[in-house]
Length: 237
Length: 202
Image (cartoon, rainbow over all chains, first blue to last red; front, side):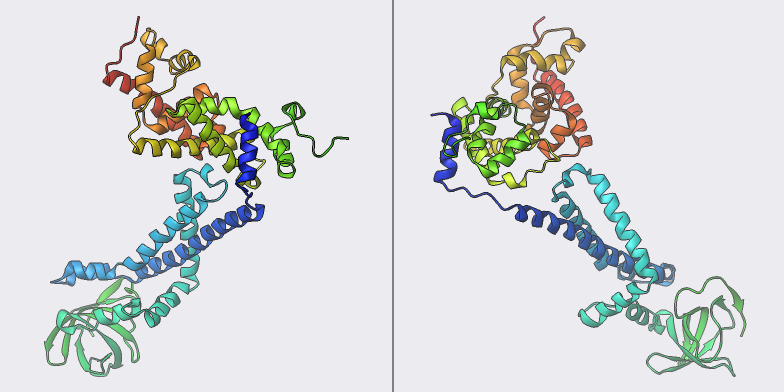
């Protein structure tokens, strides 16, 4: 028997059905959506990474006397880096699974996914989305610490030289109330005051220094609560 | 007017483009036989080249591959050459089936036809470089030892005479990767020949 006839008989006897055209189209669309969705999620993750790095104070490492590595790792947005890599991987898989996806070189796919995610990340970051996302995660994910919470923890260790709170009096030197409500007298006679710090009542500040006795804290550096505060001057208050 | 019960013959399909035959096959399965017959010889030869199947086994593999072609006929995209698409399905089916037989411990053989002996060394510039004629058994042994991906690109490029875009569509790899694979395959061929001390008759 001719092989072509044998083939047709096989198809007919086994009742081989053709897959629907829509099925192929839907599959193709699904992978494109998956690609765009992954790039979007990657962009969100990237924005939080940018936000966390912009708020990170890596220079504090020089003031840390123990558990430097732990402190350093605690500052890194490991969860978000993992998210970024994961969704980068999904986006690559997504586009490679589209009908013509094989035509793009892996390098082009990785570079374009990263570029799109980075652009979206910057947009989300500047629109304030990254901060909101960080806070939403902190509220809803047990064990997740937002940038604010981490900062609060780091700067509430006066025994280790990190103190923060709100200035409530400047009449007889600086008086500061920390986040637990404890009042401190701050000695800034040899302190470096960062440029964006304004010594006034109600100002929230971070202070590097050491406890002199009881509630007296000798400051070596004063920073604004948000960020590092730019350049500054030695200050004798 | 043609009786609808009358069987379509290869003669009816002469001069009809593949893409047109695909459309006709979707309406009348008899046209699918034309596609099969048009490609049968070429594809059996391809299966034999990339695997060590016997002729009868290659026919079976081709039948299986064409059942897949039929099942996925709606997927065929006219922006692609039909021959590339059908080669892709046959290639994948052959490799899958061939791997199954390898796990069963079947001996590797490479079916080398006259064309392969004639074309491959000259295309690889081996004769020119070495100034010697290739030993036929040598080619066979080198191909047996070559990684599957290299063997496939060499066969597609030099024996099936596919261009980079077609190979890209068949193997589902970017054109740049295909070019790299071909270069590596050439190097691999020479290295294996050297390493195995495969003799070339003067």
